[in-house]
Length: 223
Image 1 (spheres, rainbow, N blue to C red):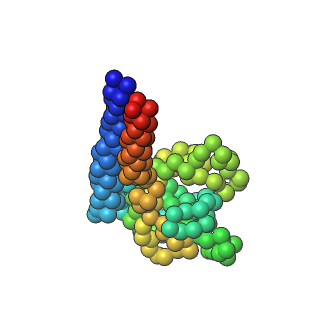
Image 2 (image 1 turned 45 degrees about the horizontal axis):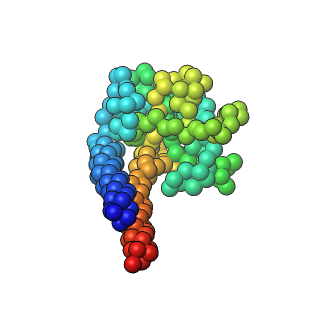
Image 3 (image 1 turned 135 degrees about the vertical axis):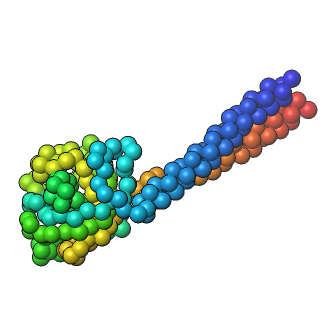
């Protein structure tokens, strides 16, 4: 009887930990599928701008547009995946269809920021890119300092530049401009479920070893 209760407790605890590990493996399969669908959407054939874009449904949708730069740029200072530290250049673009939208032209490195010739108002552009509603802000993000921002806040930028609350992150731009396009990707989507699964299985193994050790100690005392 002195062995049965610790044994049952040990097996129950290991069962819970193992079930959590398998749950994380299920989450891994789900997240991998989500990322694959997003990647397929990103690389699909570009379409015209949706008439009534929905952030939940149209995020990452590839689009193509032509128009002209319709105002001065905003610069977003940060460290960007695949592009290093620098300024993302966001401009208002008046499309040939008469819509004003935000366009993220790409990144100008910090060491070239002063010398970079940014596109002037009236500059014609033909581009492909992806609709995106990024959320770069956190509790420590400072407010904008003039035309320098520290996060891409689409509604706030749209209000300042008098555009739709719609951002196109460029993949290709013609003619080539000073910013280097930094297209959207799935690199920023966290997928740590395999690591969590390994942790739960590892804890289950430790739990079982401790259970066996406890049973051995109890048995020795009863001999």
